[in-house]
Amino acid sequence: MASTMKFSWVLFFVCSLFVQKTLGDVICEKLPTNLCSFAIASSGKRCVVETCKNAQGLADYTCKTSEVMVEKLSGYIETDECVKRCGLLRGSVGISTDAFLSSGFTASLCAPACYQNCPNIVDLFFNLAADEGDVICENLPTNLCSFAIASSGKRCVVETCKNAQGKASYTCKTSEVLVEKLSGYIETDQCVNRCGLLRGSVGISSDAFLSSDFIAHLCTPACYQGCPNIVDLFSNLAASEGDVICENLPTNLCSFAIASSGKRCVVETCKNAQGKASYTCKTSEVLVEKLSGYIETDQCVNRCGLLRGSVGISSDAFLSSEFTANLCTPACYQGCPNIVDLFSNLAASEGISLPTLCQNQMKNHRGMLAILSNGGATAGPVAAPLAAAAPTPSSF
Picture 1 (cartoon, rainbow, N blue to C red):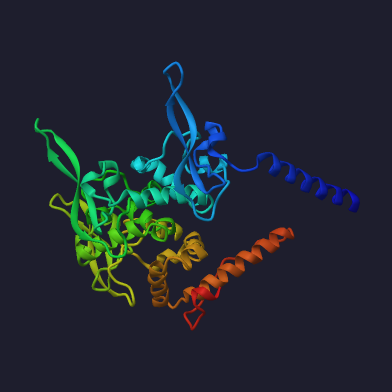
Picture 2: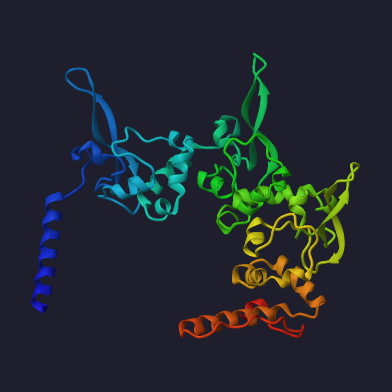
């Protein structure tokens, strides 16, 4: 066995020397055009595919050495893997900043698979972008305008105007909204999709917050932690909008919301002029500590087994073992503090300790699994314990 391993290493070493000797220096002019683009000569200069005319006067292609010098990398031919990851094509003729006009290319280039693993390609386009100069909103196509930031630090916005025929047309304009710590930036398709947005949105306003689906997307870790430009935009929109007032909320966003005053919102039933039941959002007298101006996400509503637009909220919910099971899951109990606070206080008003109830729920679940695995009888229901000093959500 040892001799076999030794022979394998010797063979690998001999083959490596053979390949190195065979290849020698990487010279652009000796490369086939399908390996030329993104390659770097041993001199450290980039290779580029150029167009020329052959003896018959037809267009032909050849690999040439450019004057672009690469630091810390030489004698390198890019892998097919990185070419695909970064959304490129082998044999590209000339490479320019026009590539950045494609939002699909920008998304591929900025994806971790390319941006973190293909330093040669990233270096190439980083320097191309730096050489291009300023990002000017008025020069951007409308499909790249929304969520972009000009080099001046001002946000770009798609505006509607009328053409000579009186028909609506769209143009990219520089707004007066100044962004701190970010400039000359075009948002990626990846972040636009993650945050539930659309390319080419005409005008951006706080009306987006009326959509619970949008809020759910915006608050996901993929968007909220990974797309700082979009989060900054909507954070400032929300701040500029002013107070959250229960009476101004649609009923589908009312339940579990908290007004800027710190009081909870509640859906109430009333009768309209025809005597039929209708629903409205009202401010309750329940004051919430440490949280205000908050609209609950669809993600937490679903995690905790609740429904949007619930009319009134009471401790009767604890009569449902299915609801208790959802409320006590780590996804809800540790990740949705607003809902947990609401039902903790409801439970306490009935003399029930929610943390202890959830602990018993977990113990009962484990006990049931143990009994079922041993073929025994099923465990009994969880009793609601009296309210008392109990551990916090993070302790179990």
